[in-house]
Structures are given as C-alpha cells and as structure tokens.
Length: 204
Image 1 (cartoon, rainbow, N blue to C red):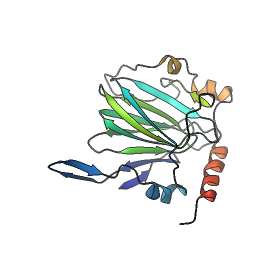
Image 2: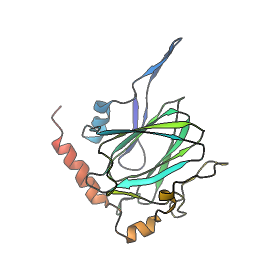
Image 3: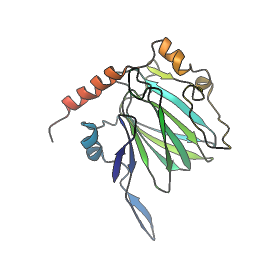
Image 4: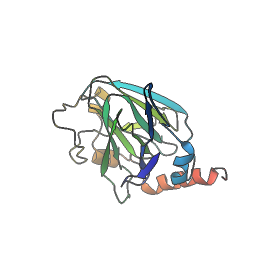
C-alpha cells in the first residue's frame, strides 16, 4: 500500500497493492496503522456511508463544524468518480485551492481527508458506488456546504459532464458567502484539533 500526501495539508491518496488471480482480486482497502504513521493518530471509524450515483451527480462541497468535524476515507466500489478535496480552512496557505483524484475499480485508490477540509464527488458513470469511512456520526445541525459550481473555487468537471445537484447543494452558499457567514473553520483550530488527537493517541 502506497500512501502519499496531496498538496493540501491533511489529505492523502492511497494506492493499494492488488493481488489478482483467476478467481478475482484481493487487496487491503484500509490500513489504519499505516495511515496513523502519517497523521499521528488512528482514524476512529464511527460511521460508514454508501452512495450510488448516476453519471454527472455531484455531491458536495460538504464539511462539518470543528470540532469534531469528520475525517473521511473514500473509495469507489463500482464505477468511477472524481474526488475533490477543497481547502476551506481560513488562514491556510492553500485556502480556496483544491485537488482531485480519480477513484475507480482499476487502481482502486482511496482518498483520506482530515477534519475541516471540504469534500465533493463527481460520478463519471451511471451506477457509480462510493464507500465512505467517517470519523464522526452525521449531525445535520453541524453540517454545511459550499456550492460545488462556485466559480471562485473553480472545480474542473470532465468534458461532457452536466452537473446534477441536490436541492440542498444547489442552494449552498459560495465560498465567500460561507466565509462572511462565519461557517468556515480556521486553519489554526483544525490543526489544534488534529494535534489533540495525536496527543490522545496510545503509544506504539
């Protein structure tokens, strides 16, 4: 398993080693111990989610209040997605920037994003199924969104994709509006929270 940091601090792309044979394929999809070597703490999986999406479905940009927010570990079980990690942490050196990773059933990559980062998925095929490991349970009172087509963010969808949004995501504020409303986490509070997780982590 190869785990590499993305340019946005707190986000990683995970490429598993696959073992195919005439019966199919085997792989380790998640290694909490390996991830902890980079993050400084084990990801506690509190909730798992599955979403099935038609081509063009865009989910996000979603985030939750810090603390505890939600760290996420996202893979594709079928089909393909573009996974977007968006830095919405006010004061971060990469604030407002994003990175994307192709999640599919060929390379079977995963994306890990730490608490406080924004997340969006764009389905590239009908019936694409995403699997999420989450470090905290969903709490609608603490969940927020940013409009995924905000031109100031500028997520680049593939040619030929017509974005399909939920009513909630279509009504979400822009990044600037979210900042003006005080919805965005700060870089410092996110770092302080993840450092507190490391301090509570048991000695190896």
